[in-house]
Image 1 (cartoon, rainbow, N blue to C red):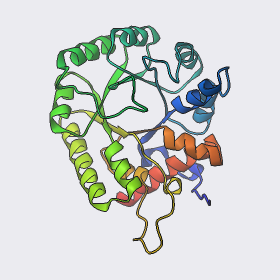
Image 2: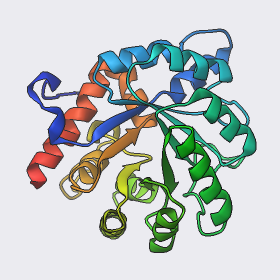
Image 3: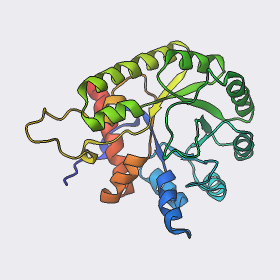
Image 4: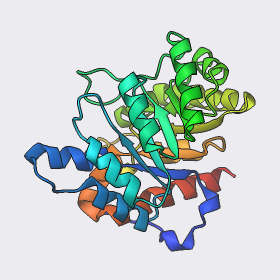
Length: 278
């Protein structure tokens, strides 16, 4: 497997979305054996050193990866904004208020899911989401809602008082992994329309979930059509994307090249895509 990347030092921060690095999977690896290694806080510090603009983590109800003590240590140790992902529950809202992270992303959560599946149903639980947005804003956290690129959900997010939305790129990422060109085009258009709508409503628009680099995907079968851009590049090229939040594929890539190089690779991919689209 061959990896190549433009040096991050040659790129400027204004050429691409901010990169939020999700460290949950470092904690997953630690928890698989118990003990304290590998430490997600140490990974977060290395990620910041490598150029991460934001550190993202998800404190789940079942504590399957990030733990309460990790949250406290991240708050004490990390100098870039923390993006605290959590479900809209009284327990999580209380923890967020005590922690006072710079950013919060409210997400759906089901106990049996492997990872976050689908977006938050703002329409169906509007009053609860609106109250959560108001409470967290009063505590000094910038709130984002993780939702699908659905007009009704985007409009509800704006009415609920969230200043930001993070659009769920999972369907696009799955189509990319599957090399399903028609589904990929459909999801790109849906995402682009959602971003445009969000911006028109005054929302700051982010994107994330399942995004990867082309080196992550197995080679196409012999005789297949030419490989296109990575899923990360496809989303980063969209001018309305202010932040990308990436975890699983970035940590997986780091297994081969190291965490600092993996961050440089993802940032370089986003910058190249945005420049090419300009």
